[in-house]
Length: 339
Image 1 (cartoon, helix red, strand yellow):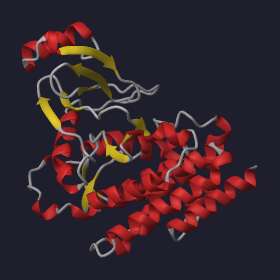
Image 2 (cartoon, one colour; image 1 turned 90 degrees about the vertical axis):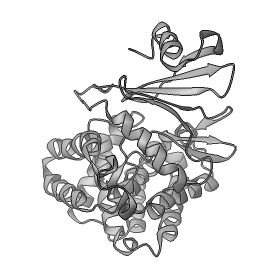
Image 3 (cartoon, one colour; image 1 turned 180 degrees about the vertical axis):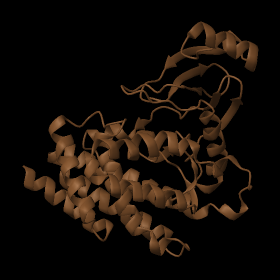
Image 4 (tube, one colour; image 1 turned 120 degrees about the horizontal axis):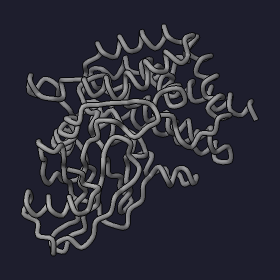
């Protein structure tokens, strides 16, 4: 069963989901992800759907495998995240097919834009940066790990290990032996910090903007763990774009500072918030290195930009900045000195 095969998909929708062929007005394969087949199904009756089917071998140059069962983790993520966030921030789950590892969700209406594409054009709206920070803070702060079932799937970190720890952190440690100690210590600490729900893929790539509101997608790495990972993972995207787009560097600098300030103020008072910052610094450094030396390098960074990012990360891991603001300042100053 391959949902990117139109004939297969039409037959599947009619026989398995009771959707007659005449109700389907269009099928479009969506690009962008490396871990799933994703298809837009346009319908005559009711809202359009997006179907996702997990791949066992991810679409990257390296051999990178992950259990297709992770698609059902994404379905659980949608169920968990929807009540934690603002109305409209998480799309409605339609159905979940355990046999074929498929989920369907309501499509975000048109017109919408992918936030990553806007950022790569230097289009930075402060209101969206604030939403991005406050949405993550809501997720981290509103989830109550004590009330989540003891046998619930989010307590299992296998997909975080196979999709983040090994291909991002441990792969970087192999590629850059001089920081192996820093990364391995961070991995050990992260595994022990089981605090709240962690999205695991919180990035502009997974944000659609509709009616000036962000909509968060792609929840297959969600688990209960260290919230600092999400913050470091997402900060990496602002800082890497500051590297890629020097003409917009000051805007990305401001966006990174605003994002962190929004998040930090929004989680203030949470039992874990006062000790979070050093771990955010460490995860940001590790993620920035991973996005140039791991199994999923940022496609928009040229080789020279990747080398700059690597050199700064290696230097900074020897003596990490004490605060997130100091980390942002250090990186921007480093980039400006490289001009």
